Length: 556
Ligand code: CAO
Image 1: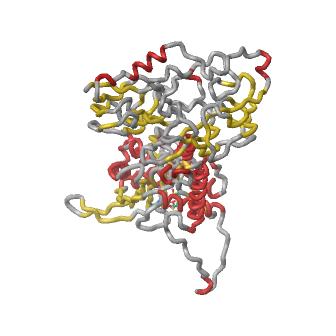
Image 2: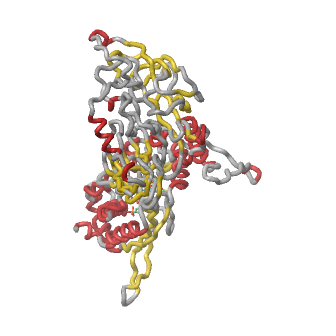
Image 3: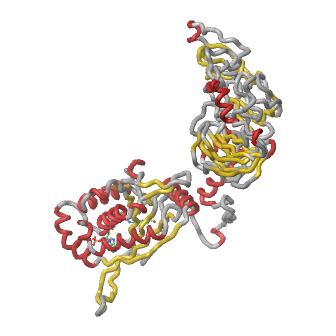
């Protein structure tokens, strides 16, 4: 019995790759080449295999860590002391030897200076597959005529254990592809021709034009790549276990997809395990991803159109002929009304709403407001409760910063805001509009009253610009002048919440000794329960109501 440290093998030049999965636990018995951990670089993921058979004594990395070649990831107990070859050390020693030229069958030739500006046609070849032979072409990522950058995926191949992108060895235009899905390819096979600017070739076995003094790490094979102990006789440190042939892993599920597909999925914000795979061995292809996106857009659109159809498993609304019940006229909705309807459906269906209620005692606020009304009018502004609500909401957003947030598009991050912009719902003849007052926390009551009035007029006159309606953290919807004792407003996502304000009423309130008449303002706070919890919302609304009850707190 002997102990052996397990090290990260040659990553083909990649550094600081992510550990995305721990495939074994302490105490597990593994065979040589069993996957121990899975790492992911920019373009690919790979298993880090057991160098020998044995028992796992420790694993010193965890998911999310970053590792580089030579890093110790754990310890193993191996069967016999003799077969412990300190593999990683050997590899390091082998690599310390003078680096053989990649694609050494093609001797380096000095690049002619005049060729720099010319375009040349070059063969695109399958790079070193690390011993794997006749792997399947499972996807063509480009077609003739496509422009590609060096490193872009051309095709995806799949071996026994994994898949990998075959990247372009140069930037240029694809002249032809000579393989199709289902073909089998091996190292060095020509898969197509590219027209590339001379001098734009990185070198490496994928390129037909030899590059001067290519270093192994500059090979176009996607990183990371595994190292192998018995590679000394090979031109590059070719391992015996499919070094460039990587298996795709997603942290959440065993989804099979090429690196390019996974990259696209990340860019589009698609969780791969939701996509129906149609590729060989249940592999998710780019076409599957596109089909999924198309389906989602269709569902979203049918929901946004008010049909609430199918997208979330809700049966579509039945078509009803209202004329069977009495006389009707049918008018087209205004553009604003249609946009509002679409947004309301989207927000109602996407945002898990919670609405919390409170009443603010605004007796003193009303006394103060009325006392200031004449002065305000002299300044040309109308002092209604709205500027006070704006000011109190801004103070509460500053007091409870955990409420001044939005859920990030990716659903995995919270965006914290260090600005306080507040939307104000305005009822206009053409529909509901929500202009935004910026930096409310930095403005005085008169300024806010003036701006609110100007924006309400601009909204009613149809003079708001798109920018005037963007960027709010939060919205206030006041129906106080209209009436009602309460309503549950719909969050204007991606804002965190909306305050519905109803008409104040004079009510008897117990002051500890007696009932006294107080002016009570009904408040209803709807919030996005994905972005904030009830505690944040409760603190926010309680603080806001407290400020309205005693506006002197705004001075603190
Ligand atoms: N309780 C009692 N009276 C109220 C009140 C309340 N909560 N809020 C306002 N008032 C009073 C005002 O003080 C004013 O009275 P005075 O003229 O005597 O001072 C009167 O109602 C009219 O106010 P207003 O409408 O001119 O101004 P405002 O600042 O209250 O509101 C605005 C401005 C733009 C918010 C409002 O005009 C509006 O469009 N509200 C509708 C918003 C809406 O449609 N929301 C629903 C959206 S769906 O979520």
